[in-house]
Image 1 (cartoon, rainbow, N blue to C red):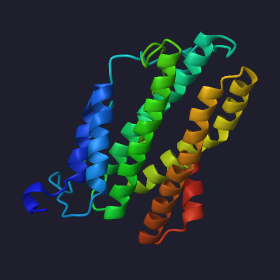
Image 2 (image 1 turned 180 degrees about the vertical axis):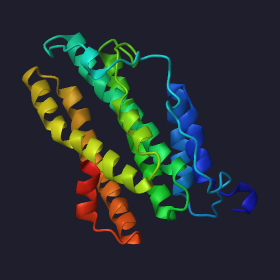
Image 3 (image 1 turned 45 degrees about the horizontal axis):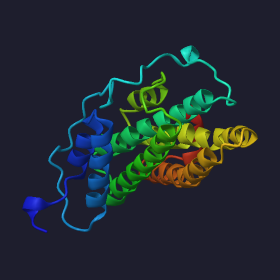
Amino acid sequence: MTAANAIDPRALALTCLSEASVDAKLELTAGASAAIACPGPWLDSLGGDPCPSMPEPGRPEQPLLVAPRELPQRKLNSVEGRAALIHAVAHIEFNAINLAWDALYRFPGMPQDYYRDWASVAADEARHFSLLQARLAQLGYQYGDFPAHNGLWQAAVATEHDVMVRMALVPRVLEARGLDVTPGMIERLRRVGDHDTIAALELILREEVRHVAIGSRWFAYLCEQRRLDAQSTFLDLLR
């Protein structure tokens, strides 16, 4: 591979992050993550300057975003109720695609393995979203049919100033919270016999464990680079 066609991971990440079309974002994510995983020369056409704030990443016009308290509570004993739950998880996974690409795009000067890790996370999240999108279609719905909230991306904006803070508070807190709530969600679905959705959520749960571990590894790395105690620094950031 020559310098002319060297891999430009942060530019690829920005392209994926900015894309509003769901289908195009999934296609771009597959291509970019595969390219970043390949050996070969890299370049960084974006340079080391701070990235501009991104109040909202590329996303389709639907779903309508509302405050979490405005989301209706639905029971799982109806198809609509189960579809709404699946839609909520799909929305989290869609945001997680953007969060992974933003972690890659926003923070220059990290080791190559950092960028490879987050590109692989983006690919996983895209696959998770596609699984849930397919399950929604089986139930007669699609992504965008229900309102959703934007709390995950607000966390990205709040941590955009420091890669260490991002690694502490997004994968190690928000994604870890998903590990805590998913088993209860699976149990509720088991009570209504939705085994297809359970299979998707169990696969997602297994793979999200790796994502939390990636965040923890890079948080520990950054604390070591800054000569900070990881445990006390994490507790300070939670306050």
